[in-house]
Length: 308
Image (cartoon, rainbow, N blue to C red; front, top):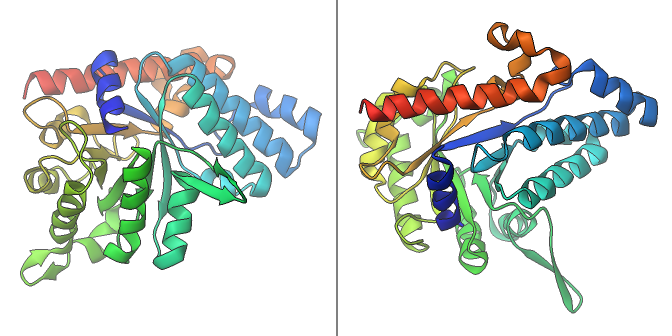
């Protein structure tokens, strides 16, 4: 799957992933009104509104970007109907030819980690048959349990030719409370990065590993260090736009081949119509605003890479 992701990045000339992280405050009133008329102000109604909102955005941007990243918590908050909306979103995005990164941040040990890996990337055995569960192409993984928690995902990646992105240095302000702590004189995030490189050696694509890393755009200096530590690791970079990251911060996440990183923007794209610069589109044309935001992000990153 890493080979497919790289191919699509090259085809679209957009190392961009759109985070499909819906909240009800992002969903335009006309979509909510229709969903509530059909299903009531219920969990089912909320899930239907989210699904229709996602569909509009995906239709508007699927030709511009290689990948999307639905964040499962935004769906789980609506219970079982929300999880169904998550699965419908995953399936629809794959139908549109997009690579789907399930932002699920799973991690545990033993059979529990195996079950998480099967649920999101692999197939579960039911009698004589086997079935895909959520069937994303990649999943995000929390490495806090060490190799016991990551190896079951690596095993499924090998079997299914899919991938994972392991949390290394996250974009949130308090990440340093743990991730920057020195262990034998070295920041913890560097130690995790070294482990990611080792795990990745077990499952290589043509030039990059199926085991990627998550490194926030808000920490460009750490990104420089981690890029050198993980030369064959694709880096998923959250924190662009709404969290303060911009194109100029991102160049060090890329390798000399112009590859090696994919930049995420979530609310900066999916809620673009609520921003002053895209207000002219209005709520009715929210998806057109999202498309315009993708084009602006694409240009920003291209200019930054050209000036590298």
